[in-house]
Length: 200
Image (tube, rainbow, N blue to C red):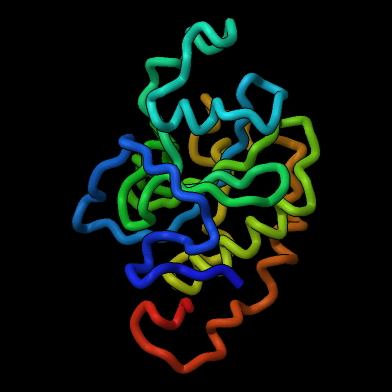
């Protein structure tokens, strides 16, 4: 079980690395979608600081040839799940992170407005780690409890909301495995508690 702080916006279990790349969601937009991404910097390399540097506008354009094209991007996600399952949070959940870009879900465009973006450290064709699936399952179940409008069919890939631009999290991502993890009820749902204390 993962814990949210008293605001309901930050995971106690996550290392906080605040990103400046966010803004306020439109007042009429509730949160009812999770977008799963895949990322590695440099591509295919894991464990370095570069993802965090990108999301915090500190990526050194000269640290790797491929960074020159992306160093000036202003992007973020709410969460990153590392290969070992550890959780990093960049943006408060109620704020709008800049992760989906030009996107559509159903008849709505601009998925950043109503979604939470979760990055999985990996590549389209590299199997994700068991610890990452466990972490993602825990995160998603907590978010589904926090925002009941998020249901299993509203957890999608970046490729689903931006199919002409993006391919992540890719064919290596096991959606059935995630679905099985989501079948377990969130432990907090058994408690009769109030306000955000129910996440503790």
